[in-house]
Length: 120
Image 1 (tube, one colour):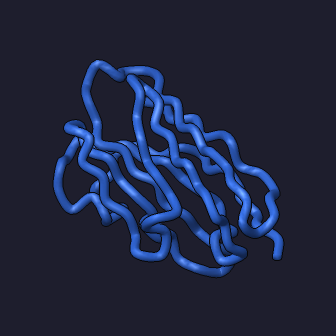
Image 2 (cartoon, rainbow, N blue to C red):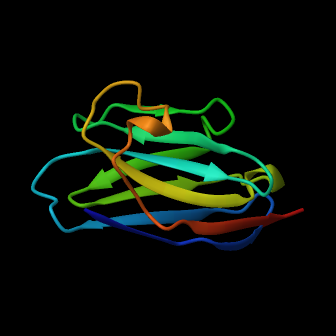
């Protein structure tokens, strides 16, 4: 499975972006999908996941501002009310598991990342 993330860019605080992650290859298997982010000099952190049944879960830092959704082989992350602390490289990931999806080790495939910069 190959994951291609896109949609990052530079935005002012309070603005919005929508990230996309398109899956290709052996997508006949179904996967839970997640978004993680890594700010400069920091570890990769969980942002959100969506299960096969559509259950979603968010990090407390983004809940109420970000929305994860999926359509066939693409997963989206709608990011509203962006803050400078949201600046990071955002990665999408696919997991064959349906549990403990806040943890990066649960994911089998990763995209290359798309950079989001929020200016104050």
